[in-house]
Image (cartoon, rainbow, N blue to C red; front, side, top):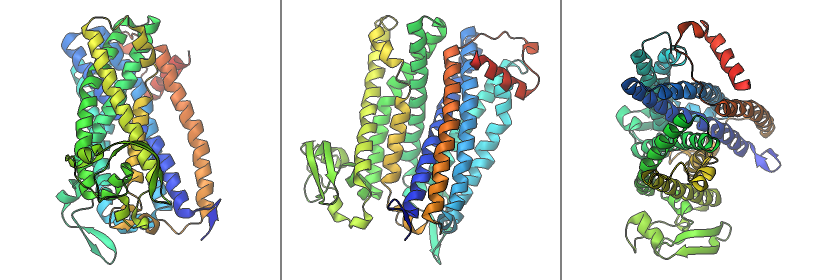
Length: 465
């Protein structure tokens, strides 16, 4: 088999898809949460008439537009990769998953496209109630898009409602396909993650303005809403994560064994705080753990047993190190989010929040943490599914296209180059808009350009100055 630097075409194709999906996932996750935040601001503005809420909604709508566009562009690239690098996956699984992707377009994407124009360019052209309704519908559309994507992804982890004929999957029960066993947990877990991620960006932005004494009223609103969401959702995410873990233990026990670096399933598992999993010798090095706490978490019994890695053939085990370490990154950040929410709400309650620079200063730099936790969780989920692309149905090695390692390596190098340039510019552009801050725009229809492209050009000029 042809290899490049010892890496075959299958692994290169996996690396390429992992690279592009890692870029892609941060933008839909951000836009799902941000659209809900904008809709909430508009509802509050409509009910109270407070101008700073209107200013904030317009400010974040500009950032939403850029993030939404980058998410769409990066998503199209992945669709092409399925055809070029994973044609056997499309051939074998396409009858089942293809319609789910189509449903996303026919419902969520059309819904977003129908009302996105009103949301972006209709501020002074439509009544406030209609513009608010459009923002609510767009927020619902982004969540609906997540519904279909998570349904398809969950099916790959817990396939259901299908039959195999001549090596091809055929749908039998669409309700079982859509609402497969892991979908409710995975969808809830992911949606909460998107709202936590957005809350941290909003919270960090508000803290940044407060420290600099700029846009004080808007900054206080962002800090209050960000902290409130974090204080509620971060503990809730821990509960949902526990339920998700129990579901994963039932349907993907090898993944749980890798997460816990648990080798011997014949005895209760320690909670491993740190170790270096030695897959060659099937043991952990430098292990630091709490006796039996792993069993208590996984089985809810102090002496509970669950399968260890030794109970699976080596070829059926997921890579242990990335799953083990990324899970601890995700959980560690989750506890940090809980602490930020509780400390912030306590300071707010004691009326010390605005003067607590020791708290606001690190908080102003906390905006990437939600994205890091989200990507770490995604890596745990997807790497932990290996060596299956559809768990128990189709192995990853059997799903790759008959392409050479050289061609995949070349396209991967081009993707890395283009993505680093294009998305660096996009992130820089968003950073410039945040640096400029929420500017009050007079409610004058003549103040807005009549052409959408002119509006986009005006936004670019504002960010550049």
